[in-house]
Image (cartoon, rainbow over all chains, first blue to last red; front, side, top):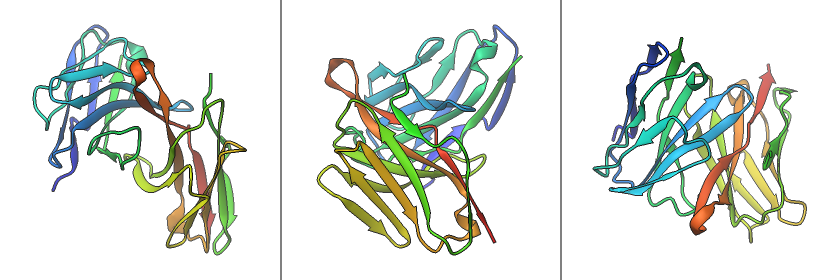
Length: 115
Length: 115
């Protein structure tokens, strides 16, 4: 199993550009989520999904969109990038996401720089 | 407001000693608590989960305690090695709107083990 994969590893954007961060898992996990990690701020939840077709907002959802059309994939879209979105983005998955009763598996991260 | 507190200063210890990291939380009684390890440039990796009815959990050289009265978890690494140097994160499920729970991470404590 590849686990949780993320692409790209690194991306530079100009203010106002759009892009999609890809996340895929091959463990048949129902729960998937996106975090951003900034120095001194820790991991903050952006959006999450408890299954295909179901998404919800986390702590910092503004400026980001998600969709979950399949169990395997959970892309994160930035519609109009801003410098404040410069961060490291992590995708995570778990079997069912029952309030952290289970292990969360994290991807390797995507480093995003918005100029 | 900060819901989870971990020491922001790095913990420096000598090889062979026991490292003790602290995770404090406020105004909430979580049913579970998790500890993760994060190496530079990588995603967090799950280490241990402890439930509210468990005072202590062990895994090899790792030990976690969970004091629901003090609202505190302690994470111990015995016989520490330079390879244990990393950032350690605690995570709890905090209640969100609609009856769901959002996994919430502390900012992490950096551990540096000197040979």
